[in-house]
Length: 363
Image 1 (spheres, helix red, strand yellow):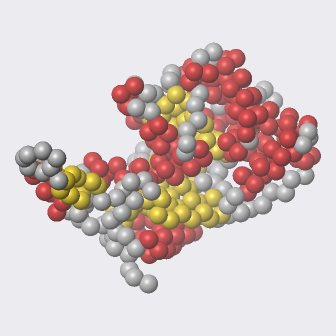
Image 2 (image 1 turned 120 degrees about the horizontal axis):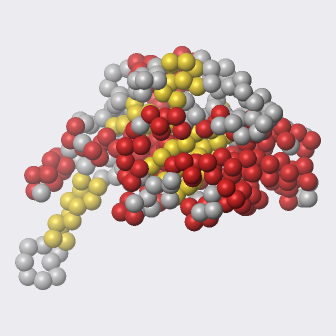
Image 3 (image 1 turned 30 degrees about the vertical axis):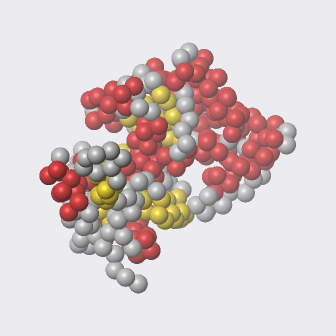
């Protein structure tokens, strides 16, 4: 133990203080992690926005920036924007950066760390992490990437004791949809081809003769329950939709206000998309067998009407839903919190494997 502690002290991870003894004998030595000596950068890359946070070892947010997404989104343009933001955030915080976690709305090719594919970004085999690493240059730590739903699951599962055998499934929906799984009780499924297939839940067929989906099929989950489906169902409300980073949230807030004012179109639109997602969530419960289920994305902005309808429909097809469905304090920030956990995990796994981290230039 003394050797381990001495190594961590030498690498400046720990603070050591001596507490006066209340009884005869050697005073106790107290140890604490130096939370604010280093930082990691978490990037939550969505179809509609980019959120970048600098986080210290305690999980405290040191800096946060939200940007509108680029349209169109060619890989090189995205990489240049992300590199510029990472540099700006690291200079602002001024601490060594020892990890970068990226939450991305994409599925992965056979070499997960190298290629990403996304119907909604028009990406095919984009080597995002490698391109970004080259754009940043020498000295930066490796970039760890997972899809948005999986990052959210990694954050939400921390709300529950691991000893309880938690199996958490998270459904993320906005423009596109995905499933994340977390919890040691899931075992090999977390890294299996089956989990990769579950990530394609956006194109789960639900409605016969439903709206046309971006994939070319009709009646997919995304076409009946995604954010574009909500906008389509509430078109008569004439709510303007901007292109800035908060567009989805602002639209949902305005629609919810119309519902509270008694607008039946707004009410029916919210109920419709919630009902469809409830059907899909029941399939996830029956297929994956989680004992905790969370959701993320625009539904969290639509209040009790959405959540009550969602839970009622899910319970119709999966009776145990009321004991499984939960919300967490992270809300729709879960994916950026999960990206920070991705960045921190290699350091906690092997803290002596890194030396100092990237030190941003002054000015």
